[in-house]
Length: 133
Image (tube, rainbow, N blue to C red):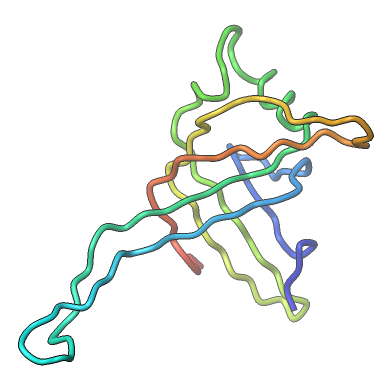
């Protein structure tokens, strides 16, 4: 059984500790092709799209920003891959690769009573390699 404690997320050559959520998915548009009669005669395949977001604690974002040259924003970071490794108790490893990620926004989301500051960052990505190795 895999759970949150069985994954490692590597971003910019660094295993993240200050991460509280990761979401990624991809879709391919598919439609039935209609012809004579009431049943489809085939299926068309459309565009591929992939989405990703990552929720990071403020300390993780601050460390990332401190590694950047003065005056640069996280949106200025060039495309990078995110490697997600899932380890089972039996030692089996599944690795997904989220390709060509870039930050699209920056900000802080904090409210009274919060014991920690975590912000969700949407990322633009090109594609996902599922079960890479």
